[in-house]
Length: 320
Image (tube, rainbow, N blue to C red; front, top):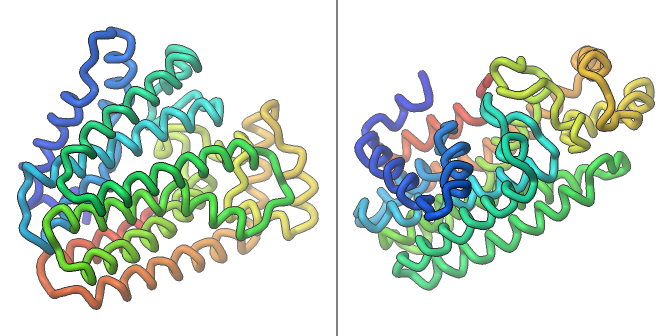
C-alpha cells in the first residue's frame, strides 16, 4: 500500500495544512518568497504534519488548533533542510536544485532563518506551555545536530555512539516532538503523549537509518540525488561505519573527499554491497522499529493506532 493511502481519511486536513504552509512563508521580499516556495513546492512526505494530526486524534481533535502545530513542525524541518544543503554543499534536493545551488549560500542561510522565524510565530499560537518547552528544546538539539554534522564531516574515526547521537538530534527528536506536541495540543492524557513521544523517537531513528541505507542501495532517479551522496559529502552513516570494519574498504573510504568522482564512488558502493553492511544496518533499524511498535501497542485501540502502525512499518521497511 502507498503511504498516502494509509492516511487518506486526513486528506481535507492535509490540504488545509498545505495552504497554510504556503501562506506562512509569504514575504515582501521576492527573493525570500521565491526561495522559500522553491523547496516547499518540491513536496516531500510531510511525515511530521501527518504524525501531528494522527497523534492529536488521541485527544479532542480540532484542526484549527492542531494545524498550528503541524505547520510549525514542518517549517522547522524545512528550514533545517535548507541549512543542511549549505553544510553539505548539496546541489540537488527532491529531484531539483537546492536553494544554495539556484541562488547562493547567503540567500540559502537567510531563507532557512526566515522559515525558522515563521515557525516560531506558529508555535506562539499553541496554547500549551509544555508544548513550547518541548519545541524549544527540540530546536536547540536540532541546532546541536547541525553543528555536529559540520564537525564530523570526513571524520572517519567516529564511532556508533557519535552516529546515533547525531541522527537523534537531526531526525528522531523532531519526529518525537511531532507526535507528542500533536497529542498535547488536543489535550491527550500525559501517559498517552509521553508514549507517543517514545514511539516517534524510535520511528525517527529507524527512519533515518533506512534513509542512510537507501543512499547506497537506491538509484539517482529514485533518490533525486546521486547515490552515495552522504559519503561524498563527508557524512559517515551506519553502513559506512560497518564497511570500515573491512580493511580493504576502510583504505578506500578514508580517501573519499569532495573531488571523488561518481565512478570511484560507485566502485566503493559496489564493494560495500558485497558485504553484510546493509543487513546489519537493517537489523539496527528494525530494533528501533520494534521498540516503536511496542510503545504503540500500549496505546488505546482505535483507527489511528492502526494507521500509525502501518506508517511505522512502511517507514522502517521502505525501498524508496
